[in-house]
Image (tube, rainbow, N blue to C red; front, side):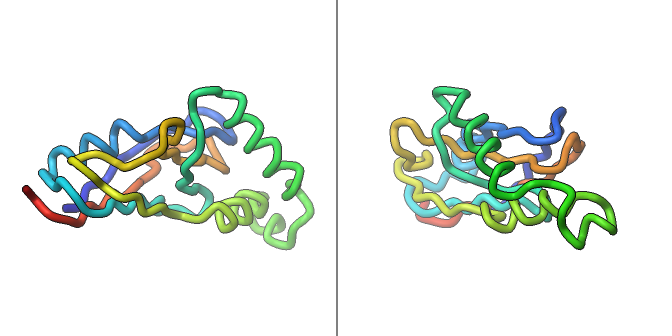
Length: 136
């Protein structure tokens, strides 16, 4: 089964927890055991798995990326001024594949699936969720 999630973001950079939306798609699929791929269909967004219990972790991650990859110094900036967003997205990666067990993502206690917005605010960010496995 494959379904799309559309998200709108309100900040230049932010992390949005999409775990519940992904689990909802898995439940609709009726797949009990298998895998779920979550893919951001954008060159300036990414999918990550990280802690979301303490919001400071999300801010720390964005701060670290900004220190590692500053804005305004890249060749692509001459085109549209967002080279750092492309580089951050490429490093984080467009997708994650997570095991599914008993009809839910098999995540650790503190893990969440998040979309990383790296060049917002944007409307209609598309995330493609593909679930493959056994229906029991």
